[in-house]
Length: 254
Image 1 (cartoon, rainbow, N blue to C red):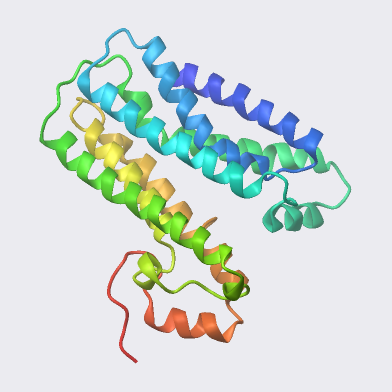
Image 2 (image 1 turned 180 degrees about the vertical axis):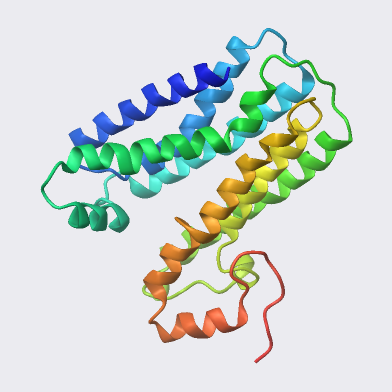
């Protein structure tokens, strides 16, 4: 399944690239992020010679997370200008081979990241494994992560929907305990899937998948970009002084 998964992702991201060029909007790749995992999970069910309880459970987790994320980002992004991150990329690239640079630096980079993150579900294909202690622990971790992501996103949506909050930073709900509950939730989701997959022999090494997405969210594409966006605002500085950046905890007393 490892080679098949790479081929599937290459075709998928090439399609996203072509769509992005038609729309002149490379942020379409964000909407496609969850969809790529959903396609891999479905392909695993089709290509796998054996379907076990663990495989069905992890596939259900991926579908639950991926479909919701696609819908959420589609509602948020469709009809709006290209995300500022991709606008800045265009400015840095200049006019020399901008589409080739977009293909390599946006779409192919995300393809590689997705492939590594998905290693636990790829490695599980074709293995018949019963539910056990790891799948129980993994399910609990997944549910915690899923709730953090879903509730965090919904709290942020409701906050922004109120006119009196225009230009303000959310500091209530889950956002009182971590500055990025949705990113923390996504990391937990993939650790939960990995723990569930551990029921199958020969899958321990796939920890590099959840480790990569955790490091990526915390230090590369998630937290740092948003922190940089608000770093000069006084209200954010006050919020930052008392609220944990990633792992939730009680706010500091000032």
